Image (cartoon, rainbow over all chains, first blue to last red; front, side):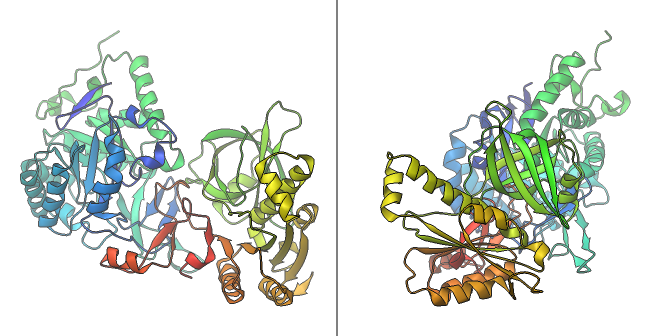
Length: 316
Length: 293
């Protein structure tokens, strides 16, 4: 089940998506966190953020809108209070960061590189719920600048998390790859809105929120598929993965690893169930390694242009 | 999370439901909750939080237990649950959160419930009744001896609702040996007016406030009024709050409750004076003085 992403060896391709797994400790009573491929913690910012006013959650068909607003303790307290527990795990830790400027992204990356126990940095250029959160991820020039400055600030693997709220995700993906990204996470949430029929106002105080859950999965699979054909950078697929079969779809579309997000809210054991589901798919279809699935759905003529070299399953 | 079966469903006019699930053994503090959702469905997508009414041993199954929740038909989540038949499967996670705190110094519990806020206070009344039963049955144990020194804890319940249909679980409260006072907004039963009026009138007649604690659950406006009365009479008050949440165990950070911030926190935050706590993990029972009403 082992894969390698951004130079980090993972025992399996299942990670937890930022913002759905707290700082890990909330889940440690439910299962052994060392069974995960990697842990990605809630976005860390330079200063503590109280987050947005409630209500922050609105249910949607097959998903939910959230507008948390990057509530977090800030980098100082993260390093002091949260990292020591995460460091005790053998599972690689990826820390998701969000800055208000190109410089702040670089500063955060520097602080994390000096800390022990951080395997890589996921760069959040796609949060739809804070002012300016989407700017870096929707303009290829800004994406390039942020990723390059983080790249220069740290020796750690750099993994930008891309936004689906763009006309052409491949343009942003290329910019991130050109700037030296080691892997790409996609997708973050899709901007959405729910209106309350009684109050006749949007349900969330900020009007919009980020849509997640199985409702967005086809969009995410399509974007992974598109990006896999234009860059050589490995992809981490995210978007409404509830089961092992859902994860397999992302792998077939060209992702090397996956992140389980919203499913964690419905069932804290979801990542373990997704992992078991991938394993049974491999057994059922007689694949020796999970890497054989990567990009297998992409037609070979298109595939040859990218780094996807997975063989087709052998005839039985 | 465990998958459990619906054991029974009982409807109370017009749209209140008592639902029982078979479960593994489960011990809970009154005020704690479970996240519940019909298994295998994505509509409703998210589980819903329900206060635990009680957990009882099932008579016909070895070691089996039944978890009871009591809810009002509100929207998609409760409607989906109310349509389930005995034997249908449900995802159940819990008990979660922090329930009401019962210090050894408690002598009289003043329970205040508004409408469908009644389950956690019934759970508390029943727990207090049970602990007194244990103390009479057994002569051993530190807690028992301490309680017996204090004598019997009194429970006074104030239950309010819009109409007589909305004042619920009165029999359960009386069975738990609570003295029950009722208020309805339309006067169809008990005092005509608000339940907080009854609480206030009762407190005015009390000569001593020693050992009194108010435990409340109900609409936000009612809880705010209860908190103000508690403040005026200088009585400790715990309120059980609710907020829309996705997970119930601190991961989604959706269910925040605005709380008052200490000066130290204000300095540390630098940018803002807003402070939030998570309803699911820090609550749902809070000290009323903590809340930024």
